[in-house]
Length: 205
Image 1 (spheres, helix red, strand yellow):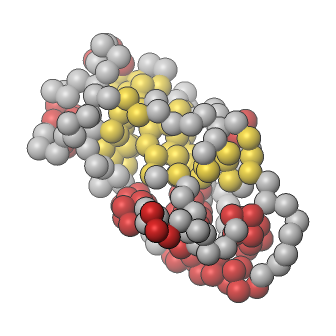
Image 2 (image 1 turned 135 degrees about the horizontal axis):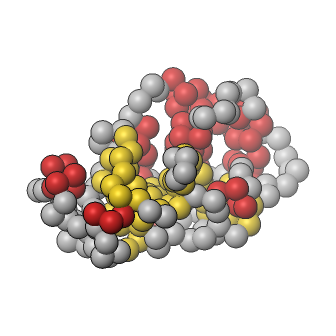
């Protein structure tokens, strides 16, 4: 559960801190929980007011629920498609070439990625897409690169006609952030028991 204060600012209470994700500033920041003890964000707090005074959403204090990850999506061993792998490679290459602004790009992809009601049939199966992406993903550095990887996977799947969600989670003591892609309550390309250790602070649908 988290709170979406503006289009770019969200937060979640994680242990003894409120953790904020500022997508526009491409950064996280924290406020000790005792400074906002009510269990909901204090919209008058200087750290919030200075960033979002005129942009607050009407539903800013309504919690957003994220599907708890229950299982890993298994794409199977089916057919190979070199064309689909090439497309996946291009999305990955473009995402890894970006040095910043990944959160802003995710917002843009989410905004345009809604499938029209009259065009609900995917161009390619989800199994084929995930299988192809997993193969070419091995050619890229993985350590500390979850954000461009998630961006590329979401862009790739949206282009193939699949609605998926990117979830950004955090943990404290020490602070760590991670993101992953879900289809419903199934995690794509990652172990659900690993991502359950992170508290969601934002999702891009």
